[in-house]
Image (cartoon, rainbow, N blue to C red; front, side, top):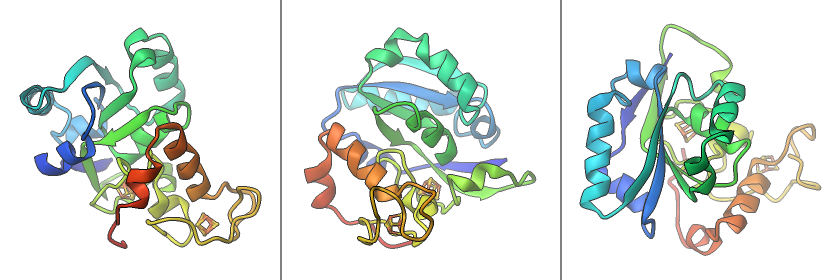
Amino acid sequence: MILTVQKSDKEILKSLEGESAVFIIACAGCAVKSNTADKQSIEYISKLLSDNNIKISEIEILGSVCAKQKTQEILSKNTNFQKAKTILFLSCGTGIQAVGSFSDKRLIAVLNSQAITVVESSYSKFCSVCGDCILSYTQGICPKTRCPKSLVNGPCGGFVNGKCEIDSSKDCAWVLIYEKLKKNNGLDKFINSFIEPK
Ligand code: SF4
Ligand code: SF4
C-alpha cells in the first residue's frame, strides 16, 4: 500500500489561494490505512477549510480512488463533482492522477505519498512516492514520475508534436501540464513560481 502523511496547513492553504469552494475526494483504501483520510482527518480538513471561508460542496469517500474505471463511473453520476471547479484529494498521488486522466478540473493534493509498504504494484507508474507532493502545482500530473528527466519547472524543450523525446510513444508530461494550466488559467501563477528540484 501507499503510505501517506498530511501536508502542513500552510501548504494546503497556499495551494487553495483564490478558491471559495471545493469538492473533496477521500480514499478509503491506502489513505484510510495511513490515518490520513479517516473520520478525524476529514473533520480536520473540513474545519481548516471552514476557518478559511472555503465551502465544501460534498465529501465523496471512494473505495480506492486509483481504481480509475470505478472512480470515473461514480463521479460521472455525481452532479456536485460535475459542477465543481476544484477538487481536493485525501489520497495518494496516483488517486489524483486517476481522476486527472478524465477531468480537467483543478486538482489539489492534501497528502504527501511517502513510501510503498508491503505491496509493490503499478502505482509507481504515476507516483514515485517522493514524500513532497507537487500535484497541486502541476495540475494533477506528476512530472517527477512521468517525465523521464524528472523535470519539475517546465519541459526540456525536446518534445515533438507533444511526445517525449526519450520515448515517443508517451506524451510529454509537460505538454499535458501546460494544456491543463492553460484551461485553468494557471499559467501566470506557475511561470512566476519555482519548485525545488527533486
Ligand atoms: S510529486 Fe509525484 S512522486 Fe511526489 S508524491 Fe506527488 S505524485 Fe508522487
Ligand atoms: S520531452 Fe517532456 S517528458 Fe520528455 S524528457 Fe523532455 S520534458 Fe520530460
